[in-house]
Length: 611
Image (cartoon, rainbow, N blue to C red):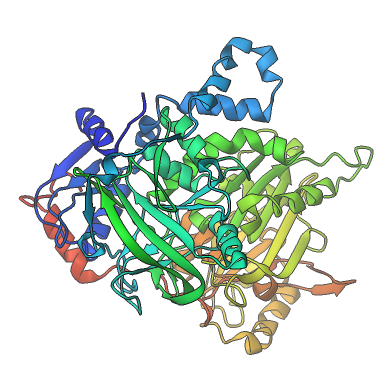
């Protein structure tokens, strides 16, 4: 049976030696966040901090800190939910193996949300001032709720099956917020935005319930990219193997088994500065105007536990969520996107900046030389598919060229593509379009460009593992050059000079590369201010290259040309991944906090043996 409460989950983890308790006082001001980051990096246990400065509530860290523990939390129903997804993806499987799928309909029926009059979250009331003031990074604009379950209903339609559950960050104080106000940050392509727009059009306020804690299935349902019309409450019930109990208090819908419920109300059109916030791309999300909510009540259980996480440059704890989501949704991809076999949003690149795809190229089987055609149809479908539409760089290859290719092996996939790509033909830009709100590489908030790279057919080149001899005398403006991966070199240049000067700055380098030649085995060059860092690991390369570039502005090429509005180059392709003036600052830990946590983890300290 699934967990009816977070406390039962904690007890189970403690019983199975996957959780430890810490009774020494810890500080929610940066200290807990650094502890959590170290716990995750060490693949450590979940930790219940029983004495947290400034709050009467215990805090739970690293609950989803390993993929194995995340699977353990949902072990009772995980396989059944996977079967339901597989059945939806391929209904004929029910006829081929009927006894394997016989329970699937009953799993869904038994998961319908159940209305009750009362529940544990009504046992006590508290206040915003008593909630943990958790700040994760030095320049965060205030304390944030980092595992919120934000619940809204479609205006004019009161139904638990018409709710939206989302994990949108919530700022508990700071900036210009009054003591009873909280910031609500939601981005492009989020369900709450639809409800907000409907409330605005009806001239109504929007009731919002922010639940924290409760059965872990609620949190996973909140981040799950479910198809339009499929209730997150229903999914949480299936995953938790237990119907979600909810009650109503006025026009607020409340999951009664949550540990906390903040009841608030948004007035559409009223905005206040929210942020900054250290986010999952590894940079600060800047302070911007976003909706805020007035808090009417804060409810909690008598044994309430406050779960939290920390986001930052990947991988972090939310990586486990991403892997669970991939495991559950992967069977649906071929059904929703015909011809597409798999998708992979690259965690090391910040998720949305880079997506890899395996498609099919079947349009002209009689052609001797296969060129991307069906792959482009599939790429357009991917960029119109749910949150995949937020991808900035989409690289797609044909599975039939190498049936053993796996997207999770990013280095092998990039090698496969770079051996086949034709830069004159295979680059397809979308300009002045929407991108992820948290990606500041674009030309404005929410706005930037996209680049599809589609490659298929026989290899065109072998990839170099060393720098060309032609570069031995140096290159104009290049202080350092290194091969980061076969076929990819990183060049260190001076700081970015501004878009009004960059073409003039790069012209001598591009001309010299064309004149000297010898770059056939290096089809991709990445420009950066720190070649040593970018070439040190695949993770560094992906993070630098794809979080710091805007395709329309930062893609250059040797011997480039535009023909009938199609841009291409003879090659190499040059990606300018230097920091730009509009970019958000990267996340850096406070050295004083680092020393403090070092002391806690030292021999004799309360965290010795845990960190």
